[in-house]
Length: 290
Picture (spheres, rainbow, N blue to C red):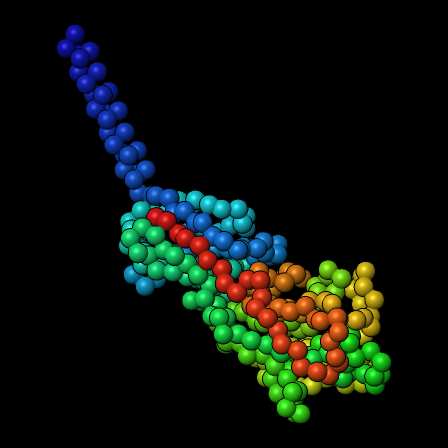
């Protein structure tokens, strides 16, 4: 009988120890909950990745591609309790670099158990952004198709000056112009500054064969139209957009950040400055709960 009681007590002790170990293991991690507004799906080659800043160093909270929220991630409890900031980046799907990429889209400091995150603090603040453009096709010698080109410049003074007043972007981002033609967004090219030509000024497949155009972002839609469209076209009644794109960017569609947009008036005059308006999405925000 004594032997049986001893064995029973030993078994109970082992069970208690096992439960204690399990409790310790469970208490070493806790959930981080993301509830973000305005994110769009990335191309197949990229994912979003969350980071907490602990003692000045980034610690990954995991990657995701789904944009349905809220989402929960299991994170080391001690590190999460010590975190001062949350950052969201865009990373390659196959990423040999363990550090955060330059393309940071959301950031916010923890206040208690919540961090309010916003793109204004890490991409740029577009609250004062403005834009102007003209309709013209300076890359060919034909003056009958001037409504088929858009250039982000202001010629109201008689001389051309930059038409875009945009903040400097953080590393990992570029601006891109678009003309939404019969529902299809067609790029005018990417650029970092509105006071110079865009990146495809000399290589655009859409422009004419006579010139590269003025030293400002823009595009002539004169040849090699995408499937379903015909060039030259008429941009009157179409929408002109400035978006902010991850760089590099493997998606052919405009990214969610669109600080400037404008529908070209149907009675717009060619070669005449037109003012842009505020775009549909100037910032992305959300909350992070620990």
